[in-house]
Image 1: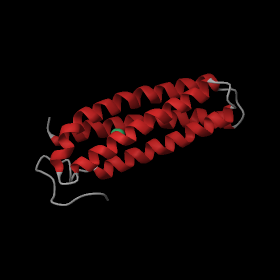
Image 2: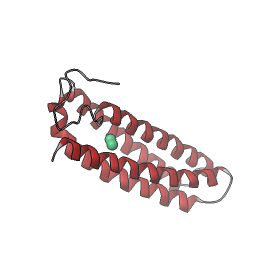
Image 3: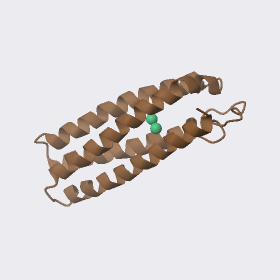
Image 4: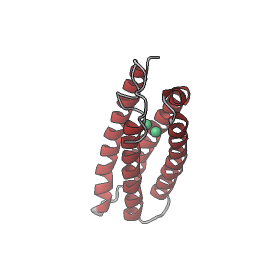
Length: 148
Ligand SMILES: [Fe+2]
Ligand SMILES: [Fe+2]
C-alpha cells in the first residue's frame, strides 16, 4: 500500500468518526436538557465505540510498520499512538458503563462529552503527527518533522 493510500483511508475513517461523534453529541444535548434518552445515548456510544475499535485496529495495522520507517521519531510516534489507543478504549468503556448503569444521566452525558473532546483531539494530533501529507508522502518523508 502506498503511503498516500494509507493516509487517505485513515483520514476517511477520521471523517466517519467525526460524523458519528457529531450525531452522538446531539443525543448528549438532549440528555442535558433533561430528556430521558438513556437508550439513545447508549446506542450512540455503541456506534462510536464500534467505529473507533475498527479504526484503531486498522490504524495500528497500517502504521505499525510504516511509522518507524518515516523518520528518526517514528518509534516515538508509534508508542504515542498505541498508548493513546489504550487510554481511548478504557475511556469508551467507562462512558458506556455510565450510560448503561443507574448513573445520573446528565453525568453520564457529561462523561460522553469529555470522551468526544478527547477523541477529536486525538485525531487532530494524529493528523499533525503522522497523517500529514508531508510525512506520509509517496516520495519519502522530509528530514526532520516531529510534532507540529
Ligand atoms: Fe488513533
Ligand atoms: Fe486515528
